[in-house]
Image 1 (cartoon, rainbow, N blue to C red):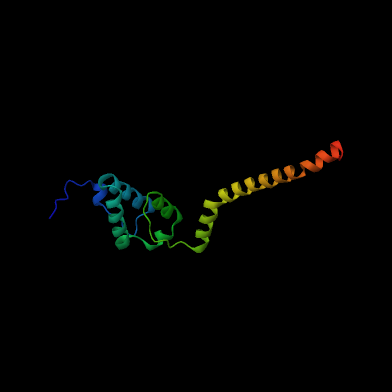
Image 2 (cartoon, helix red, strand yellow):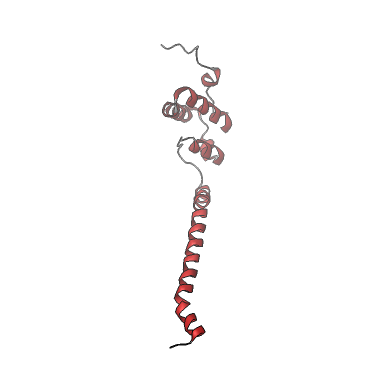
Length: 125
């Protein structure tokens, strides 16, 4: 069996059901520093499935922090939170597309009316 005496306390002390989201996040960060992302993700997900508080899966802060770190915990958030995330992620894109489309229609209208403006200003020949 492997000797775990050389492991730091921060890795040995696995968070529990009563641990805060921050404690789980810090523990994951320690795992990632020591073992790399792939192994850390596997270890974290296994430990969290056995010891993690199910309510943390619906905690937006925890969910987003872990997602930013590349850990995909099964999403137990409410459908309202999911809709909110959708709008938060895509609202800027929709606004930009709307602005570009509006400018495009405005320019089209100006270009389309140029012959009429020319005819009014200089008279028809």
